[in-house]
Length: 396
Image (cartoon, rainbow, N blue to C red; front, side, top):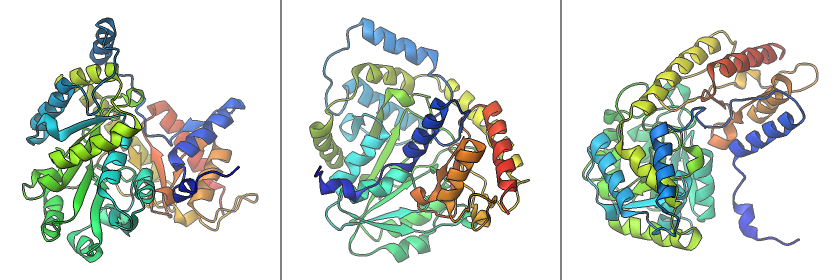
């Protein structure tokens, strides 16, 4: 069967692949603990659910405008002013079916054939694949656990070329949990000032899950704001993964371009989700902060456990709900049956022997690492890491 060569340009997301393998083992009756997916184990707050029920009762059941309902776009502006001290108008906002679609819209709207897109490692699995879909060229900037998985201005300057079109990053970062401070962003902004042709896509989906202080957006620097595309959504901070709603805030020309792209793919986002999102974005954030408090407890527990595991190098995550340790100490080791040669082998070893799912670091641009989520219950996290520790101890 001859399918399109388009399919050869990009890979299946490893996060989804590992989740699928875990489900297959569960279907066989095996108790698999999922530390692979980035999904809060909390239910959507009650006031948001009630807003959706009301929207159904009020018959918000028709096609929606491609960029989103006007009241939701205004609600996004209200949120950006309240939380980030950023001024935007409704014309700057495009609402999409999840932040992943928002990212896809932006990359496709900005990237031409062979344009260079700079992505610091580690990065979310979809970034590089979106660039490949757009026929752009991925340029990685390597970071290390010793750097807290954050790049500096000198590294950014060295990566810039006349072909650079986009810089794409996240803060807080999936998978490393790195959070850029205002001072660190200001140093990067100093480089971007020299390259006015470069757009900055700033993925801020983990904004609220921050363990070190208030969130800082690179859009706060006035000289860069027109070139920044903020990507955000409701999945992580509001426990609304299945509702599928993301959005961008960008210069009106970029917003119109993203609207044009979206108009040919999906048109407008789900009507009921949009009405619930208005309430989520404009209401008290206490439910979100309660989740962050619990994530803080889980983060502390995981870091305590990892300290007792030989050979694991782990920077302390400052945001999001992942740890991303360097596990290369175990490369070349075996339990007598399975030889571990790389992160993919180790991830599969843990799945098949410890029955714990994770995601190999190759997918994030860091082949020495594995991502583990702590967005599961404390009970599951403790049991999962007990199994991991026991399985790793068998590798000699």
